Image 1 (spheres, helix red, strand yellow):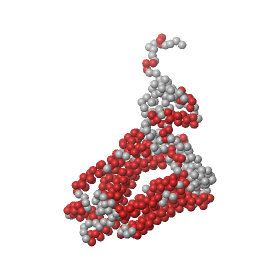
Image 2 (cartoon, helix red, strand yellow):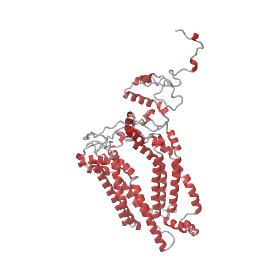
Image 3 (tube, one colour):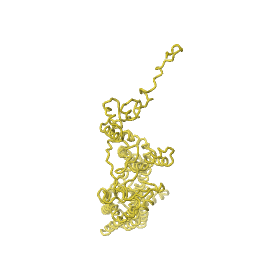
Image 4 (cartoon, helix red, strand yellow):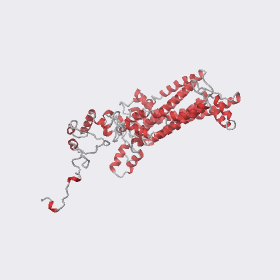
Length: 559
């Protein structure tokens, strides 16, 4: 990307389709371009840094336990706690009436926060595997790479938590063995708050288990400062190249190219769903869950006081039973799937703006990019409107089915109104945000297919074994020779290395004696000189006993 405040450049138009780079096998990445020695080292680093995530997970599970208990009847629990200060027996009666026991509550409040986090900590080897497979050079910017590392860690650690919340909601809907009388207003309020708590915990995990702390890489802010105000010109250029690569996936795509119309292919629609899903975590779900929490809290309050005024001292449930869930979940799933062709359809609808594009560069500032590229700005705007329309259609269809089948309740109409006022605009904003950020990924594919960022590493950790074991792999050695030849070196100077004992193309500095210098003819021919002062080197200084100091001048050797 190019900053709009940089030196003025002539506009780029009528660019050819970007050339795809050849695919590279991650199993052949040279050991010198791998960050960590092995997956085991990455797992150990995760374990050493896991004490803060463990405390965060303990707090999260304590919050979830409170929501599970209070979610059965939030208003009743609140009233019982207030009046229980004057009459303790009233609290005991409420506990028994809602299907709990004091002993079970006391035992579970101790065991759940202590044992449940083990579910997440057990996924650390899986976390290490997902992070180890990342290619830093395939990410368009250093920020994207560090964001991908943090996202993979947090999503894997929190997957068991989300699974438990989903299982609890399902058991509540089918009247399972939990003290919830269906998915009424109280349980739905608890589910909304639980998912909001998971999102807050995810933000904390991403902040603590970031790439600088876990992998030892420089933070993005430090790289940016070096690129802007660094004293060494070479360091400034290297930091700028590592910070951001050149975006070669221009919009609109070249007519007739593979990317032109790729938004309506199966792969393009799948990438669109992934992009929209990622944007929904920042836009759609926080707003929808917060609105659901407020709506269901008010509904539970009204229903509870209605029940108190009517007959007895128990909350009147309004459950979302299995029949209603069987109707709404398929409609919601079909509505989400209907968003997949939105980028492709929007690209067809803005085809007339292709001639108005004055510059195909990908400017980092959106206002500048939208000004010089009306095609892309139209793609984002029309995509947002299409997303909002699809969300509105899904809500209307679900409400109509519930009304026709007689499965509606007092909450159906109020819920439909809230969704139309909240979910529809947020769905449009989510699709627009996804296209603004990832339209090129949807149409072209990942950025790593077309460009490689200038970074010293190509892999976080080897998939198996260590870097030293990879260096001994004949396939990796052959790939290293090929790269030496491609860089203009002499691969024949290294032809006898395999036969020479102790000679390697790569030396692990962490191994004992690795810094001891050895004169290798192949290295010398390539300009790689040994450490002349290293222990054991033929060029190192001799020991103290190598010289004899004469006692008198008569013992000096004659010239």
